[in-house]
Length: 154
Image (tube, rainbow, N blue to C red; front, side, top):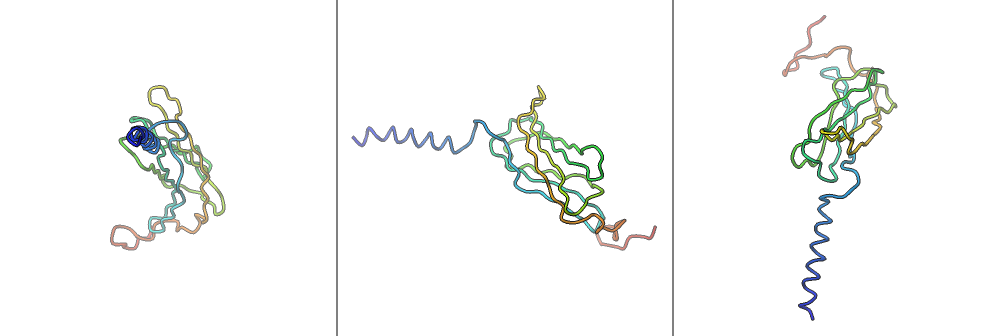
């Protein structure tokens, strides 16, 4: 009697193991896990970014697009790259931005785009709050170079 149950038990365990791998199926490809603003006093710049966790395999060659709201009010900042291999996380950081206000949230969007058709496979949006104001940064970098030499006067 026990020998007859062994193949069934093995089949059930294999099914559970395959389900745990998350190798396919539906649902989102990614989920935001973090994000925030970076105020770099040394170079007098502010930027922001995010990190997303990959929930299921992203097809190789998929275009990963990040869109950041421009705090200065200009058009959105768009960055793109291609998915490669087995990625665990995806992270993007905006270039230097101007006009960041304390207590205001800025929109960040992550899209996965099929390269052949342009079809959006997944799109996630997050609001990223700035707890500091860009006015805290100096108008120009106070130091230059790797040795932190004082910046020359203008």
